[in-house]
Image: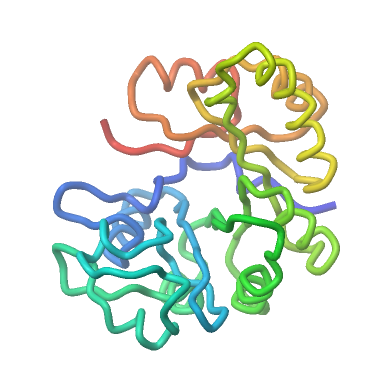
Length: 239
């Protein structure tokens, strides 16, 4: 049985502890989280040559000012592109792990559309191989969890869930079935749940059965109070 204690021990800074002067998913944001004694949540997307890059968006524009898709460039080229507002460049996950060592627990959100997740998952698993720190992977995409359950079962895995967008009656009726299918395929050790959906009739019985529930993105005192009652730890951004 995987040791899940690190998931609930300290809060996790969403995309690192970033602020107006510190860019999200940057080395400075990781160091700020470490200094605060908190964990780090980061995002990874895949480069054109199959390397896990620490970056939230599928396209470069918002965070770098550069045109193009992350998947359209090789890792070496992405590593030369500066993040907007600082001198840092886009890092690989392997670079992040080398810098972080075991100084803070880490949640790695794997962002990928579609079912062909193998290249990105393989790169993440390779980066984590031999890593001695506390780390878990998670994704909205249940195929990511399924890949890790089969190919790298010793890595702690989570399912990211949001009930947002279930506006119509039909969508609300299908939602629990869809989420149940995602849990069945991903076989997660934990859930990372949208704070806007708590309390949740879907999450509550899983939590009562022993599955840790983390919640994102917590920003306000009211959300902290909700998380205290309906989750086991927060993924937060400063208000």
